Each structure stands twice: as C-alpha cells, then as structure tokens.
Image 1 (cartoon, helix red, strand yellow):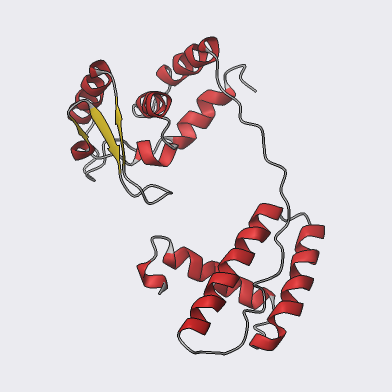
Image 2 (cartoon, helix red, strand yellow):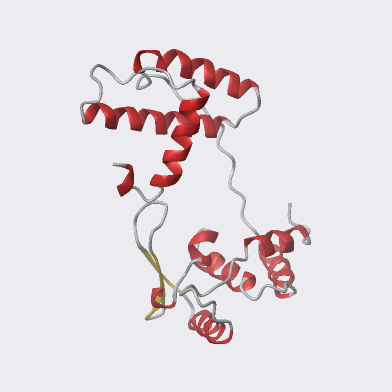
Length: 198
C-alpha cells in the first residue's frame, strides 16, 4: 500500500524508527507501549505535532494490516486521542515588509530566490511548490501547481510581467534538470534574516 503513496518511503522510514522506539512490540502490546513512548517523548521536548503525526502513521499502518488480514480485532491505537495543539496565529507581510524582503532577495547571489518569492507572494504557493516549477506548468497566463500537499492541482492566474520574468530566467539560467529554479530556500532564509521582519 505504501508504494502508492507520494511520501511512502519517508513514511516507511518513520514507521521503522517508531517501531524500534517502541521495542518492536507484538500487536497486543502496541497500545501500552505507544502511550508510554509518547509521554516520554513529550516530556523530553519532542514536538506534540510530531508525536501526533507518528500516531497517525501508526494508526494508518495498523488499519492497513487489518485490512489485508495480518491481524484481527480492533486497531490498538484507534481510539487514543491525539494531543490537542494550540493553533499558531497566521501572520501576513505588509507592503513595506514585502518591499524590504524583495530588496534583500535582489542582493542575493542566488538568481532564483527573488523570483520564487514573487511566485509565492503572487499565488499563495508553498515554497517547495514554487521552487520545483517546470516550464510546462506556466501557460495561458496561469501557473499550475501539480503534486501539491492536498493532492489537488491548482491553476492560479498571474500577471504577464511575472510570466515574462520567469521565462527570461529559464532562458538565462538553465538548471539542466527540467526545473526552472535552482534550490534557493537557504538564500531566502538568509535574506529574511537581513530584514527587520520578525
């Protein structure tokens, strides 16, 4: 089943690490061991969001094992509640902050960072979605994001001037990978640190 998931390999490695942390228990001991594990992990400062993700992976894996007949009975972690998380309040950049950030990005030696930031600001895309764009995803005045976190394709109209800059960048800075941009998140973080933005 995991082979069909986009993050299947990553999820498998996380599940293997979790199984090792639990002492690779038989199914009838998973619940008690996981309860003890998550308490110790939380006390040790592990993020509650990470522990909740581990819980979700474990629950999903056990559901799949039940589905294929590897064991019978209820899922041992199905009715365990996840930790309640305090939602972080969203913050937005104002016009002056955007100008300051773009000015710093223009000073970067990385030729992709400013343009990727402009795409994110123009479309609401995640950094990784914008950074991994390919030329065929830009047409008819729109950028289409594929392989998104929500598994849904999104097409967002953008200004012609932005499309022109993207195409010019692709022509002047070929990556040789099919992607329009080189990796530039570190350059973005570096530029952000040079601003007054908190």
